[in-house]
Length: 312
Image (cartoon, rainbow, N blue to C red; front, side, top):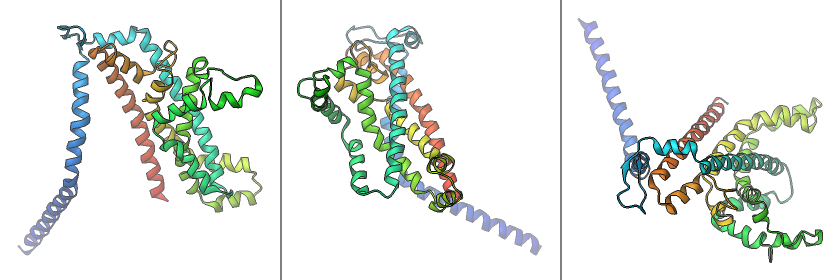
């Protein structure tokens, strides 16, 4: 009988402990509810409405055009030449910007991780482009640096016979890539620099004692260490570069022709110039799906980095 009472007492203690743990868990989550409600209202409801409108044919310039279209808007995306061009431009812009930014960011991070004079000032100057508003940065490039009449770059290239060249008109995609690389290289540099500073200097010293040169130490020790940080920077950067709109709008307005029209800019053209709400909603849904896929890979990479750091 006493044994049964002891077992019942232990069960009651465990039950009360579990109940207390649940109450503490909800007490910790309770302050997050307002933020969750806010995020749900400003993100999920508009997205649900976008998905809803994507199944309808609706042009604001044509009264009475609101009708159910099923998957016609999505089918039109597969046959529309402008869509294919926008997808290709988006891929080209994203891959080019991320690849160049990662390479330059790695080089600058290696420089700033070493003992170099003025490292603090250099780090501040390198971060500055990332802190400038994208629209303001694009205007500086367009009117101050690349203007064929009074721009700084044509002036510096005058001795080489390259003055008064309209760089934006002749190489629009390359210009947009250059501006975005200037903007995103500091971001890559910060992430890679964080990985480099977590490296144990004793490992590099041991490698040098064993006769490894600088390139071998970088290839065998440093690069494997910072590889997760490079992947994280590339994925996070891709998440934002895919959504590039400001630079294209201010520099080229999607032209000449459709040479720099990407998915976000095409969405703007269809929605705010063509007023085709159904087609614009379908484009928006596709853009969100692509963004979610990239974000999923970015989060997995971030969690893997946290797990590795936790095991150290």
